Amino acid sequence: MLPSKGGNILNHVYSGRLTAAAPSVDLAAVGLLLGRICFAADFLLFGARKFSDPSIISTLIVAHHLPGELVYPAMFLQLVGGTCILLGLQTRLWSAAFVWFCIVAPSIFWLDNLENLTRDYAAAGGFLFLLLFGPGGLSLDATLHGTLDPVVRYIPAITSNVVLIERTMLIGRALIALPFLADAVKKLVHFGPERELFESKGIPGDTIAVVMLVEVVFGLAILVGWRTRIAVAVLIALAIFNGFILHFPDYVFAVFNDRFHELMLVNFKNRGAATFFKDITTIGALIIFAVHPRTPNKESRS
Image 1 (cartoon, rainbow, N blue to C red):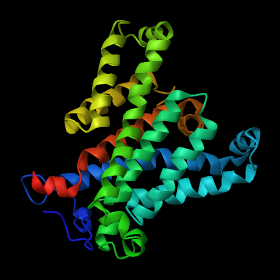
Image 2: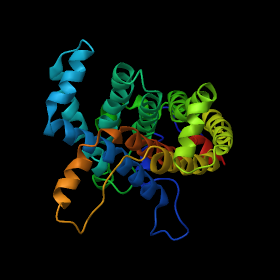
Image 3: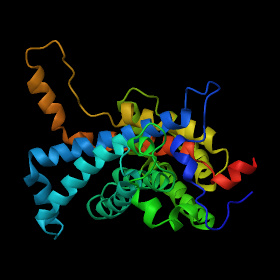
């Protein structure tokens, strides 16, 4: 049954909807926490890098004919907003800000890098789901019962309008599916170089055809909302493969080494880490979507 017109159909989502057989384990809350951790890993790292040396990003911003001082609000959003997303505090408010950031910023700075562009869009899709449904039970918002949530308090139409929720979820699914569909097109257009990338990682070149098939089939499944949890599981595995095999940066791990701090600083400043961490945010978006694959009224009927 649909909720009453004035009711908020998402009041229950702080505790999540997927629960394990044992009531003490809330799988939805765990999933949303993992998704938030994936998001925070990216934003906190790159916010900290901006903080350590704002001039690098400021120069990049100026090169795109924008004020270099924009580095400071970007830094604030990534550090403070990333921390709040991690803790699940004012989650809907910060998610709205990150949806805007993950669409606008890459549309300016990543137009020459399809992987980073579409993965930032996928992160925006994940944030749309956080905006709609909140951070889950393992969050400060849940502890505070959403009493500080300005979206629920002052813009209730966002969380009570079924049609708006369904349309927003469609946009979120399209954004999350985009990097996989775009990757398939890129592999088709640049088949030779992409095949060589696979072989350079010790993977048989013919594997690229299998990967393209997976990207198209399961990317479309996410887009149209068919067998979504199966599609999510497959695409998470693919995103892990992309991140830890194809896009893994040249990190140096030497815990028992007298140059440990120096090596960690090199890792921190590694400029090749961007696509890897954007694969991580794509995993986060997929996990968050897996918790909320359908609108609440449709789930209540099934």
